[in-house]
Amino acid sequence: MRILGNFLSVLREGASVIASNVTLGLLSLALAVTIWFFVIDVESESRTDYFPSPISVQTVNVPEGLAVSKISEPSNVSVRITADKDVWDRLSADDFEAVADLSGVKQREASVPVRVNLKRGNVKIETIEPARVTVNLEPVMTSTVPVRVKPVGATPLGYALASTRFSPEQVEVSGPASLVERVAAAEADVNLTGIRVSLNQDFALTARDSEGGEIEGVTLDPGMARVSLEIVQNEFTVTFIVNPQISGNVAAGYRAAKVETDRPFVQVTASVEVLQSIDVLTTEDISVDGAESDVVRNVKLRLPEGARAVGGDEVVVRVTVVPATGETVFSVAVTVNGAQSGSRVELNPPAVLVTLRGNMPLLQSLSSGSVTASVDVSDLPSGAYRFAPTIQVPAGTELVKVDPAEILVAVQRP
Image 1 (cartoon, rainbow, N blue to C red):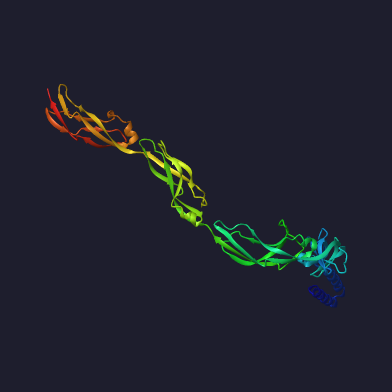
Image 2: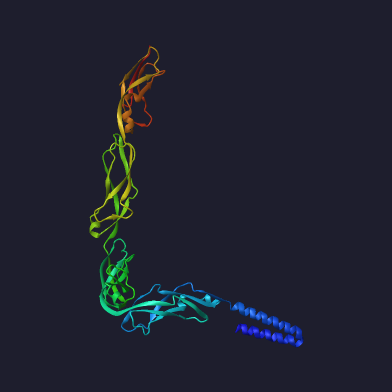
């Protein structure tokens, strides 16, 4: 309609021009008609080619008492068509219907022509390849087969399929005798992946042989089954404290100051009965025999049978080993400093007991010579004095006590 309107407009313009100038009008009219035909040709440019998708062949008017058991390969056809480009762009496989009409066919195998019907206009069928297909017919057979539920996947950890109920328990399968005879059951595929709650719903049935292969070309009546699945939670998850097990003794003079694990709390999944048997989670023994530094071990958790640890059954345990702190007593002779030549100095007592505190490995390495005690009598006149001796202790130790705290110092000058 748009093109016709354009053409009439051109004619009107041409007539107007002719009225004013006959020669110029005729030339304009000829040019307008030429342009119009060019536009018509561009807008109606067509394309001839094979439609890119094959069209599946369907059979119709199958003789009563017979069923199609097989259509010769290929069971689809390629169609070469002609259509305007704008029509091509809108075509889909749903616009085509390939039909093999079996009206009047009486033999068990027949070669019949294929007819392609179009659901859209402005398309011309050029060729159909193949133009004919061979159809095998068999007597229709009906049989009763059991319904089965086929679980697919698995329920999440801690959940289980407790029971399965379905209805109907049997269905009728009909179709070509050779195919019906192969059907062992009608199965409903039920995906259990991620299911944590019971369900009750309809599932499509699929005809399958004894090995689970799908049988096509038969009809199930009914084609659906109502399936009820009871899903129960048979495992639970509880958090427990991890208690590392330490065995043996660290080296003399050292102590185990701290025991740590990278996972102080671990979740355990198991049945209620198993979980009730657990108070705390213990580990394999970690030996610290003779250790003078930190002990770090990867050890397994001791889990009862039927239990599993979330995140794995291994933990890292660190035993911090440090020198032990203690005290030791040394008997130290007191020395005299600053005595003048010819002077006589007497000490009572001549030695003191010195108590030191520190790391045991260090204390055990010391001798009485490592500690000094002294008194200074420089410029003291003759007489008796009470002095607290000066004590020098090794680095890393602490002076706790001197016994006696003071000594008697007698000085006699010449």
